[in-house]
Image (cartoon, rainbow, N blue to C red; front, top):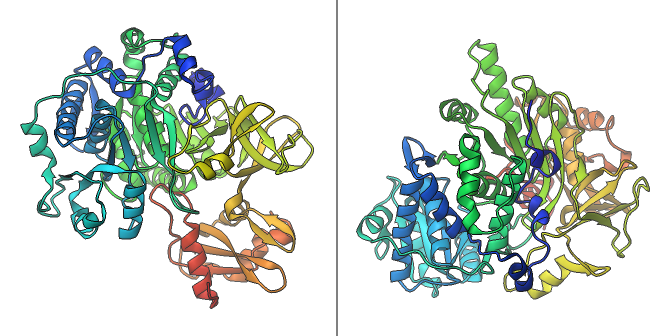
Length: 575
């Protein structure tokens, strides 16, 4: 099987591969390379080059690149007519849909910045996010009109509300109808844009308040295109004028991507949206909330999807179950078009990877990454098996102890993963947290997202987990992800999250919140004994709280706030 070189060396692309093309984030670095990149400028060139090719497919709606560009230009004119311009922030409060990508493209066209909005947020969370981002416009799903009505008096900076009709609610008073606004507007003329303009993505806020992670948009765009070119053994474009030649050279090899996870998070948007668009490809979307595995595989069949984007076992396990069930029925899904399944953000177990590979020979790309940067990768194929949580470090990534010493391979010492070369500008309006996360060691600027790991003798790393959810029990550190992985190896366990609860003797004790494939399939003692086969004694869960369903964020990431509340309530702990 032919694998893209870029994916073997740095398959995370946006999350990890930027380092190859970003030697710094200063205007001097840009000037030296004569860079004139910007997402809107690049996509305009692509639209002029492959105008009749599909850019976005959602349900029965297919938008060609020419239509995608025209609709975004009309929406950009609407933004501009309402006083938005350079550096204006536009909140996208939408499910996965073509309008999401159009609203984002239109924000880029005015040299503004799209802001990803978590559609599960309640009123106070939405107000915090939109106010913190200085949002001047919000494009929202009609089903959230009542929420917008509830909070809009608290959003003094917002000048414009645009409602996307989904058949659920009438038009909110004072808002514009999305389709009518586009129909009535004339396309905004194309403009020159500053490659140093800020693009930012807000973190999920699973362990704290969401933060806007800032990048220089031109560098970010060029990096994606450069990695796509390198993966196809083509020269990376140094200037916008070289983009048409790259797109023509890629030709029929452009990706057809299906982000099965929400666009509102980095994995879905960067890996599932930005990369295929920046290579002149196609993004296939489903507006359905939640994961419907049979629907996803049906879209793969129908549109000959080449790249499927997921988030760990929360997606891989049900997708594998659907493939297994279809095979048992004698009606297997046609998935031969899939070149790679890409995951980032949470554990993806070796067992589920091997199960997927039984159905089709492809690359399963597992990436350690966060909004703040990429750190390591693991690529599994039928010929190359990998272990759960074991990754190859990306270039420029190191592991440091908490006192700043570099961890040596094979030492067994634990440290924090740090990446250089693709370090963000910082957190929006938060210099204190920026200084703590993005800091210099030995004259090199690193990003420390908060993940801990050990380095093996062969230079690979074993991921332990995020320090912010680490459990301190009897003087030992226990990382929930490691315990969760051991628990989920039991065949009756559907999902699990692990948290620490107060304990008079140990400070904290380890508690698992787990769901089973069938009610009452497991007893607490039985599951604890099972994990004893895979974990040291101090890491074992002392108690198990069984629930019907383990709650996760829409992108599949752990919702530790929910897990802790559930454990506290079940065990009668105040907190």
